Length: 169
Figure 1 (cartoon, rainbow, N blue to C red):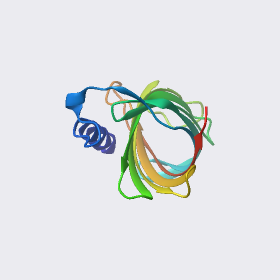
Figure 2 (figure 1 turned 90 degrees about the vertical axis):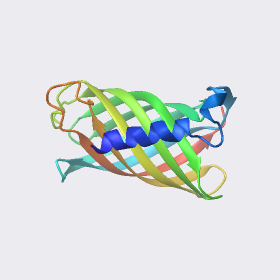
Figure 3 (figure 1 turned 90 degrees about the horizontal axis):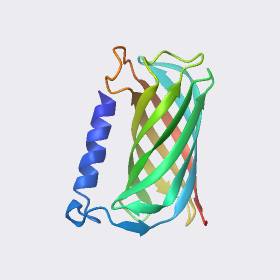
Figure 4 (figure 1 turned 120 degrees about the vertical axis):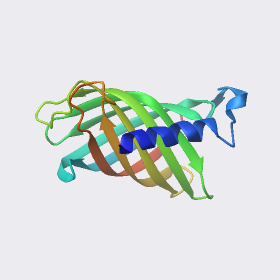
């Protein structure tokens, strides 16, 4: 359920973007690229079942309000997820932002919980705080599931803390 809500918020925030309304299309613009390092608690069926590390790289181009990114995560049980998608960043104040993301990806279960298939969609929300011109810290929550592509679709959540560094490429 939460994954669908996050995906809906992501879509609505993109369509109703004040800084780049959908009527303008998705013009390409330059922005800062950045690398995000994340530590998470993994939640399955309302129980913490492990930890996860995640690395994400966001490119220096935006398409309308969306910035492309790639991400990889690995749990302490060997669950591997690789994704490619978009983040939607919304500035709330000079120091605080809200991020929504949506990443389709490939899931390798290994010793991790069974999520029912190999194609998983990851959507989430983050509250971000600007530490200085190049560094942010954020707290987030995301949901990963197949969106009912597979008959068995229990979903997996992560509660996460991230440290992000702007890159000059």
